[in-house]
Length: 526
Image (cartoon, rainbow, N blue to C red; front, side, top):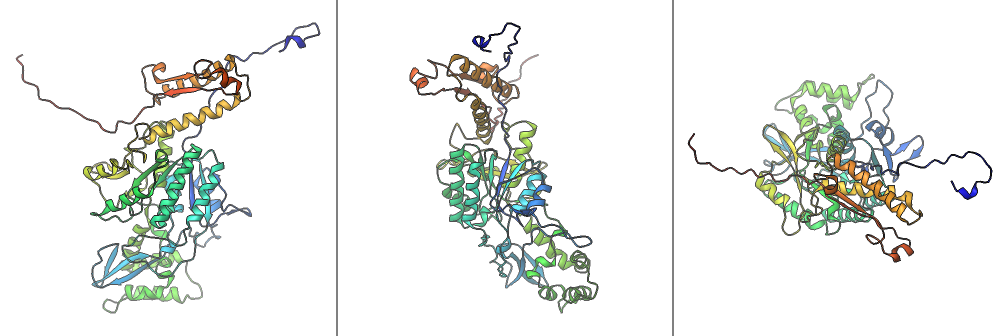
């Protein structure tokens, strides 16, 4: 209250704030998925190339998935990859195959029909995911009707570098996402994948609000001997900028996201059941039951059954068909790990905080990995003397199962930003303090304001220290906040309108290497 404005005799009340403003921690685990969805329409409004926040998988389904038809029809299929059985002259050296009547058949997809975003979002929510952003850059493209060569890397011509880069650029105006994930980036060519990753890291550096989680081309079907070639290619294509904002995981993971009911004969040979007949009903071993079902599918009677019913009948009638479906299902369920890691990070943040490394934990829904790395093999992934680009391994351990066994950024040779937890904790502190300090823009640049800012930030950091996010026996050891004339500002700074705040924090770091020393002691007399 300004005393000079009081003119009438009486009693006046002047309320004085007893507490300074507070810093509210920003959300730390909000991934943004960029890629292709079944659709992008809700209540007559398109959501193509529109960053849309969702809070549950049900909300994702409502906006980005096909609506289910009325009962009793089967639910709509959201993802329909196409697979072919290609006869081989000998046992294939690469890729999955099946032996039918002493003949080898490679099981290979139509690359134009392979997408990862839908299943990656499901994997994210299975692992404790919460708020997320979806940037749909388009819907699924047309199939080619041609299987790829066995053992080749999958490159989907329908996945466009320009589409994905456009989706990434849309996130520049969104402050909330803290993780960028492009599950379908590995469906690009190696060169285009490198361009996309460098663009993501550059944007992370500019915004300083998010990290990028990368998958590695070749991680889906790694060569047990030459797998390091894929790692080297990845390292050569990520550039040198913003490495502290990127992290990568290897290899892909075999999941249980899709079930037997999600794959059927419509996913084989482009839905042409004629090509199934010689496989399920060969002349050398006739299967009349399977032949009858296939005939009914091709020429339905007046009261045809549902696809799910025909599929169940075929599974019972033909062991060969059941084996084919199981092989296709295993291939479809081999996913890039980035979506699952986003869920793991969210779960760890909710239970502890961003200062806890998202490692030494399992990924829910993961049942297998295509390569089992040893300690020595992981060493080449974790430490690289030349580039420093660390790759986090997903490994199998006897008695423990499959665990995330790495917590490094791509900036593995940096003492400051080597670990994901350090990068994310500092990012959270920076953004929280930045938003809180906006309340003091245009406030008088005087000691009262400086002390209020110091008290506000100091109280926030003290809470982080109490939760275990900062190290030190006392708060004074954990952080310091400076703001004032002679310490962080000069008289010229004040004249120019600058108020400088200096914050130092001692962030906790993971115990990545635990060394236990054993030494024999000489016996002593009692």
